[in-house]
Structures are given as structure tokens and as C-alpha cells.
Image (cartoon, rainbow, N blue to C red; front, side):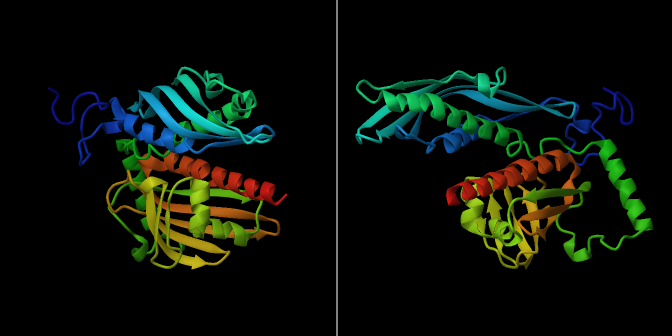
Length: 335
């Protein structure tokens, strides 16, 4: 056995309080099977398909067989998943009002194939109603593929938060940055009351996004429970007042409102469930009104270095992209 200070630095457990996977070199694995079964049911059941022929809905996830996992090796995330799914659908023919049932088979959803290339088979129980079967084969298949993409996006962002641990090099960079800040204090440095949680290496994330919405409408999307639940596609706790609680994405994200200026600014204590206990980032959302558009300026201070990429992806994919979709849907409904 190598002595302390000797041996290959890729596997010497050194300068880590938890003695875990230094430099993210070793293979680690997290089982995503149970989480995936819940997520697949969430994104698939309740899907509605409408057309000139009638209306159909995915009523149940009858069969789920397979597994999923996420692995970390050399600081990279590798995903494995293989699923055999059978869905039930029911529909009503527009002209006659006849009701029919059928199933959707997805025999091999796996990382070996793109979602667009994944086989999806639609069948219907005996009898009339082939127009509904055709509807499910066309528009229904498209909707199902979109839902499968939502599952994979969540697997790669929501499920993986915190899997990449801080490295020795990253710790050194953070300490050097702290010394530099101490020698040259900045006006916008975090005040003592904003220093929340445990002491770990962190980074600040800055992002900007333009939305086709006036500032007051965009502000309400972040502060109204019903709208938050629409773009996040799951239940949420939204108490939009100073000291009010926030919880989203089945508890994967939680926090507290610390400042609210209607249509202008929101400040939060914000954390991901996978972060060290009691560690929060400070998130500031500034809304710049551009007449028919709004520029949202995001500043997120105190993000664990190990979670920088996944946190960026969370805000971009789970927040910004979904809000764009919600705004477009609202516009289409008005037309």
C-alpha cells in the first residue's frame, strides 16, 4: 500500500474530508431505475392527442421493464438505460362519439438509439375506430417521442445534480480566488448575512435570456404557483413573499424568497437536493423590460464547483426552455 503523499494522485484519497473519489477518477454508479419508472409515468400518462378525427389520451403505463443508471468516470457522466414499455390509450371519435381503446408498445428505448429512431408501435382493440389508430400513429407518436425526450433531459440534468464531486485542483483554484478577492475586495461581494450553508468551493454563474413576454408576465411565471406548476410539469410550493418557501421538481430544488420587487427583481436562497446539507446559493433574477420582450439576467452565487455544469443545464433546460414553451402555448391559445 502506498504511503501518504506517495503513489498515483488519481487514487490517493487526500485532502478530502469525506475521502471520496478524489479528482473524480474512480467509477461511481447511481441506480436510476426507480426514479426513471416514476418519471416515465409522469411524462407519459395523461398525454392528450387531438386532431380532426377525435381525441385520444394515454391513460396508463401498463408495463415497465428495464433499468437505468448514471455513471461517473474521469469527471464525465455516462448513461445506460434500456426500457420495454407498454402504454394504454383511449379515445373518442369526433363525428360519432364512439369510444375506443388501444395500446402503444415501445420495445427498446435505450442509449444505443436516438429517440427519433426508437420503434413505437400503435394498436387498437377490435372494432371500428381506425381513424383514432391513425391519429395515434401520427400525432400520437410525435407526442410520445417528445415525452421520452423530456424523460432523458430530466435524467441528464435533474437526476444527476451533484454527481461530479469537487477535485483537488478545483479546491486549489477556489482558494486562490478567495485570496485574490481578500486582497482586492469588490463592491458586490457577498455580505456576511448572505453567506449561507457549509464552506465548500463554489462558483458564480451568470446567464441571460430573452423572452417574448413583458416583464410583469415573466415575473408572474416565477411567483405564481399555477404557472410554476405548468412550466415545471409537476406540483410545486410557491410562497412568493419575503421569507416564503419554494420547492420544485419533486423536491429536487428548494429555497426561500428573500427579496421581491414586482416586475423587476427576485432574490432567492436556492439549493439542489444533492448539494451538501444546508448549503444554499443566492439567486438574483433581474427583469429588464424591452417593451414586448424581457431580458432576464440571472446571477447565481455559491454554486458548488462540482455542480456548475448541471446547475447551468437546470436553469437553461428546466426553467428557460420550458418557460419559452409555456409562453408560446399561451400565445397560440389566444390566437
